[in-house]
Length: 229
Image 1 (spheres, rainbow, N blue to C red):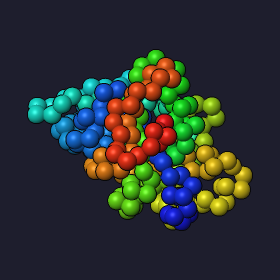
Image 2 (image 1 turned 180 degrees about the horizontal axis):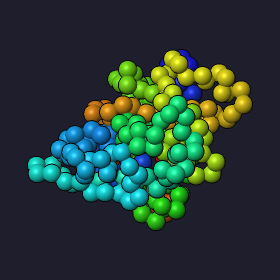
Image 3 (image 1 turned 180 degrees about the vertical axis):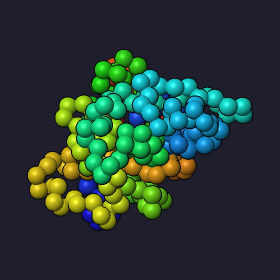
């Protein structure tokens, strides 16, 4: 896939974060679980349980000198289902670590809204970031990887997945996939290894969403209200 096509066809990205997290994200960046655990000094068993195993619930982490942070749950995914759909010898523990090493963005509002409406999340307010694809990719292109599937879900006939699920933009088989899929199902996720420390430079708007109600928390000057989730 060509980078210019990615930006033209998917000009906006969306990320669903924990409610009330925008101030911390704006200050410290949008960090992967692995980067958060590095920052908060987690090691040993406590780290393995968060990084290499399924998190059935969100977990609060803390350390002196930093605000509390939430490591989000992985309810849509189970180790038993992963054992059936993982390829190339990847183990569930390795897959959890692969996911935890990156941050994820949706490329379509439809998929974002599907997540917002999921049973596990629809009863609680969520913070949603709307981002400029061109800006984020230009600043992080060496660490950007695309996924053809919802890599963090194993419900409803989980798609095969492995180390080759996440590909650089130039290696992603866009034209082949587009022949048989809608645009929203051609490229499903954009991920960034390690996270995006300068996320505020790429954000367009931030909303709190609860029960379908959108409350704008922040917007970049000069952007239009139509730029949102």
